[in-house]
Length: 498
Image 1: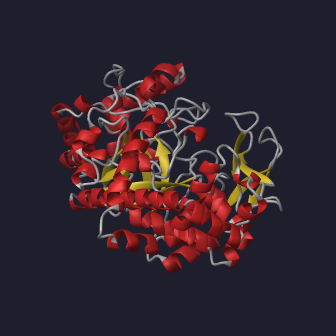
Image 2: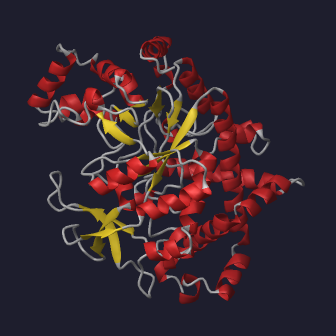
Image 3: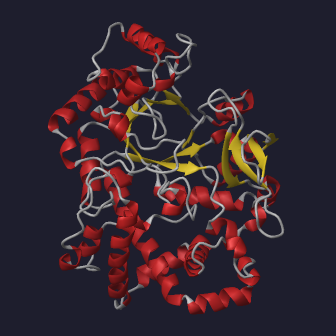
């Protein structure tokens, strides 16, 4: 981030499409064109890893830290590549345009993928596919076999599989590979198609001066191929079950803290390997994205450890992590680390020191700027430093309009109007907040698409306190109007972010 720039946060699932969920097809390219026309330099997305209804369809709770989400594969591009016919697509079910219905999409796309795989299997030239499988074998083989075995055992946790399979004994693994060969290869095929379509889209964006900002959750799911393949790197007992899990302590927002339940890393084991697993994860993500946002960055410096079996996060304690040593190792492997640290909430001096030492920009949310610490709030535009990323809000927050109407106190509204110098009609408020971010010293300003459109509470992407109904919002085809593009372009030019 050497120059002033701006961008939009819009996950791939939120794009329009005829197939029930946003994908990497025609509308992804149209949105890239919209970014180019409006002078935006960044497209921020959420994690692209596989999702499942059992984890609330959250991109932050995945069965793999390396794999791509097949639901994002474009049926239209499969037709273009000769793996499906138009007749096989038409007519698609009558999916809702404004929301994703994940279970219906999974059923529909699953049938299409089976047809595409059979057509691909009949092809003589598979060199590109074989190269992909060889180059990604370090994570791909484990992922596809784990998924295939898990489908056989339905809802059973991998820790409850037959012991030889649970412990990945060679004989058991080889038998499983033979029995599940068809499912294993189809899984590899879907990953191949995913990364092929993503690579095309990324090249298209980069050619238009648009960088893609990805997202890495610091922790991984217990029910994942990562845990099954690397149990020694996590705090598990002899039965491969967690002895401690992640969360955050009680605070102003929650008297019992937050119990996330993710397994914790054995940082001493990771360090002994030269952080090999994490280096592979960063390498994979840097091949997908131009820059990375790391969620819960403070966990690299210290993390809240909660004994497994606790019902709340109250009885946890802080444990130090080797953040400085970890990032020094990463810098030896990668000549630069284009990382944005999610440093929201209470951040210790130790975390700030790590960010300063490695020059990682943090995040500043305007929705947090008008509390009782006004006007000294570190989130207010006049208090921002250059090396940070300013947001109106993120996927975890309400929209600007929704915040003002349903969450902001009378005092917060008053402070906002004092800061703006006037009372602003609700239908103009989102542009005024965007203007504040645009004019700030921060080198990068990012806006959720919902705030660009001035949408309300009904359009927020995620409500962290709820386990259902999230990640469903979608952009409608008619919302990217010439007027909207013109307004955004003009503001981007005025504040020299083009």
